[in-house]
Image 1 (cartoon, rainbow, N blue to C red):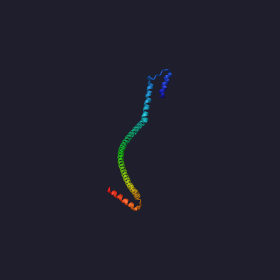
Image 2: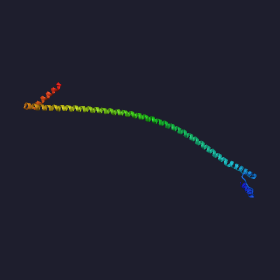
Image 3: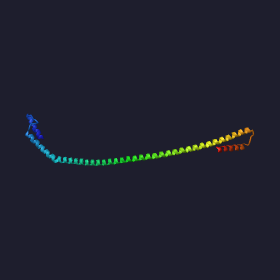
Image 4: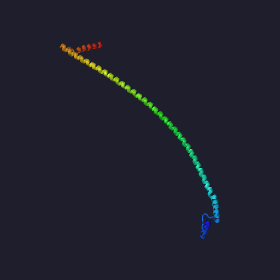
Amino acid sequence: MMLTSTLVWQEHAEGAAASPFSLEPGLIIWTWVVFIALFFALRKFAWPAITRLAEERERTIQRQLTEAEEANKTAQAMLEEHRSLLAGARDESSKLIAEAKTVADREREHILEKAKQQQEQLLDRAKREIAAERERAITDLREEAVDLSIAAASRLVQSRLDDQANRKLVTEYLASLETKR
């Protein structure tokens, strides 16, 4: 290379105009000598390293592609498993919701039945209490009627008779009126 530059320098120094397109036989020969020497040096030292690196790179890429395919297959399998689990979970949730609705309906029916029974019990108790109050009121009215009758009768007769005997007489009379009805 140095020789080539020296030749070009001499021609340039002599005054000849050096053109990049001019053919110089010395330059051509030295260019070929440098090219061949460089070719053999690269072939002996660099080419095996370059091919070895390219082969290693190719093996690495092939291994990565294989790993990627395996990872893809694993991901697909996991996706299918996830989908089946999701479908199972949806089915399970649907069953749970249906079961919860059934339980809620049964519970609602039970609560309504219980409320209805309590309502009937309250009505029965209220009817019994009303009947007892009516009986008490009738008894009180009878006693009042007896007392009023005795008071009226004693004023009419102007004589005071025995209270117990009068009460018994009026009570029997009122009882006989009830049985006649």
